[in-house]
Amino acid sequence: AAPIGARTFLFGFIYLLITRIASRFGTEVQNGLGVGIRLEGLCFFILLGFGFAASPIVGQNLGAKRPDRASRGAWTTFGFALVPALFFTALFLFASESLMALIASDAGSARHGAEYLRIVAICMSFTAMEVIFAHSFVGAGDTMPVTLIDIPITASRVPIAWFLTTRLDLGPAAVWWTIAGTALARGLLMMLWFLRGNWKRA
Image (cartoon, rainbow, N blue to C red; front, side, top):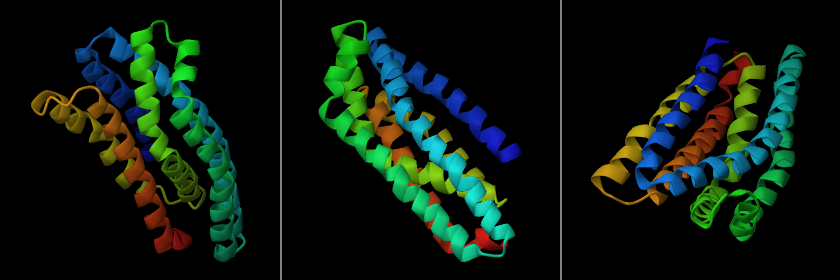
């Protein structure tokens, strides 16, 4: 449980540091980030439900000495999870301004929040990838991939965002791209590690 607990704590701590970096660009940027992350969270918690389904599917089938069925169950769950992921991808790409107008307190916050949603829209499918396969590893009793992928990549958001905004002066969009890029990397690496199949012998 320790790696999963560390991962959960890290997400909250990194969010505080990223918010601190974004606050350099003013209250509107900070508010836009806050609202954008909450809207993104709607998709994340739906995907989390699929992840909670994948974990026992993998665990029970491994216990039944059916690693082939465990693998098929994880991939099938990922296929189902792609439905809401692609829905939110389209929603964030084409309706971000309308969503932010309903929630944001001012036009400036809405503009920055909409920009955030359009950028992170590209990684929704990779977030589904990360959530499903991370929970599949947990179901298999192999939490090492989650530790070695999630923790360092998530922690890297802070120095990357700081460098892009402070040294290169690329503006708040650099923070959004940092979040999207690291989410994409986590999902892709989680899937590739799952394909190795070491979890079947955990």
